[in-house]
Length: 134
Image 1 (cartoon, rainbow, N blue to C red):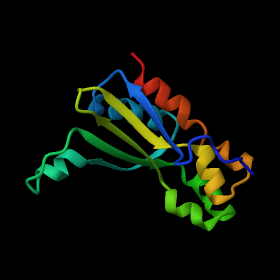
Image 2 (image 1 turned 90 degrees about the vertical axis):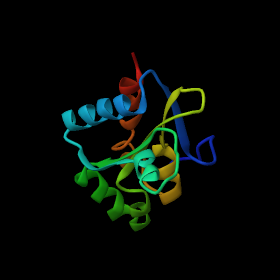
Image 3 (image 1 turned 90 degrees about the horizontal axis):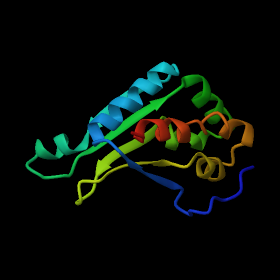
Image 4 (image 1 turned 180 degrees about the vertical axis):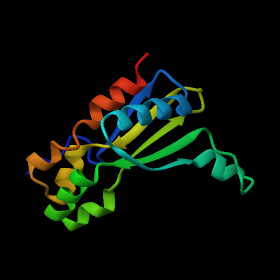
């Protein structure tokens, strides 16, 4: 089993060189190239605007690979709480863009998943690194 990660909340935050929309576009392209399925793309700021509220740019992307996700849920049904995987691209009040996602190590710890299964979702780190770079 994975040890508890250093960040007790299991959240990874990465600075992006691109606005949230561009960051998510890049992530989607990378995910498609790796045969991941995009389950939803939700523009949270647009949803807020539709009810008369203001929210800084915030986009939620839900994605996964049913083969890997099923294996995770077969090992621990509670993993379904965190699947499909999610990434949030957002902008702070200084106009800096960020990407936030759950650390796979934390998900492994939370659901008591074997390291071999956590390895199936560890690629999220490199995908985010590529999508957020210049």
